[in-house]
Image (cartoon, rainbow, N blue to C red; front, side, top):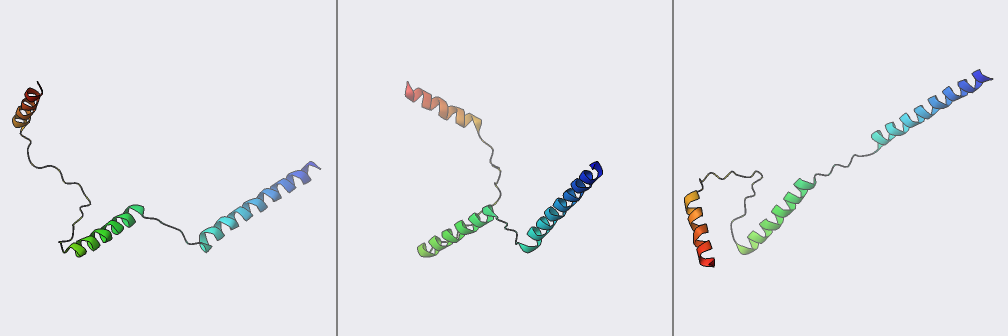
Length: 92
């Protein structure tokens, strides 16, 4: 009696595992994966909109930069301090 119950449990587990494997196999083989590249799509749409606007205005097309440039000009701290002091003096 106990052997028959264990045998049915094992057979049931094998059947469930096979059906699950078959389901995932069919899901992978019979469907097309959807890949969305949101950032690239939005960038292309913005470039198209700007190019249309530039053509209407007759201006040069805008060149989009994908990477941010570093500020290569040195900041003059003395002039910044002087401007700040001048501003503070005008508030008084």
